[in-house]
Picture 1: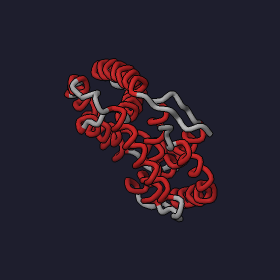
Picture 2 (picture 1 turned 60 degrees about the horizontal axis):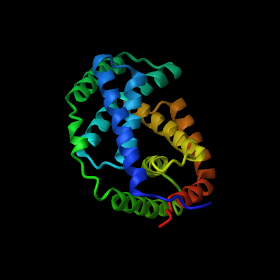
Picture 3 (picture 1 turned 180 degrees about the vertical axis):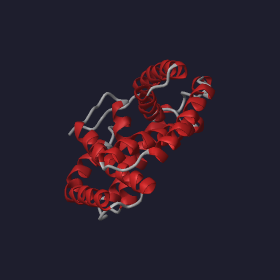
Picture 4 (picture 1 turned 60 degrees about the vertical axis):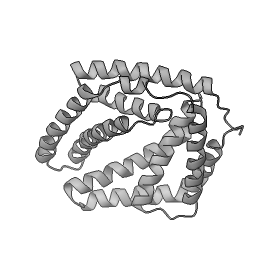
Length: 226
């Protein structure tokens, strides 16, 4: 596989394109927030975070992430035949916090972010990710390790998309880890029900069986051409 080539021009074009999308989504969500629009904002934040290091952006992502976890937990609870009344109440409060956070976010902060070191910052981030990913090769992954690996894969995926490289294998691995994460969240909210635990253990076993070869692929993806 050829190593991805990265340039300041590519990253800057990507940054301003994602900022435009982000601003439009915020405006839309502030008028009529929907699960779909909020999910799109979360994805755009991930993409922006590749080229913009903003504490406010990360805080917004955390707020929206809690909202999303509850959406998925409610769907999963229904699948397992569990009661959702308390989850729905918590969800209502989380959605209010999401709407407030969206309305309060000042997009001018992103325009004030310096572009001067975008290339060096990007390359430094990818090198750190590459080192982090190598460490996972030696582990028999615990749920905590899986969570950290999922975050690292997300970062690699969106970092490569900034350069125009899209890999289905990365997305599938992220989706598999996302499913395990969703079951973990459901257990925290509803207790360790036997059916949920059984499904989670089965998913973890399958992932542990196949992830090392996929991880080698991801590591090779994260090695940039200098």
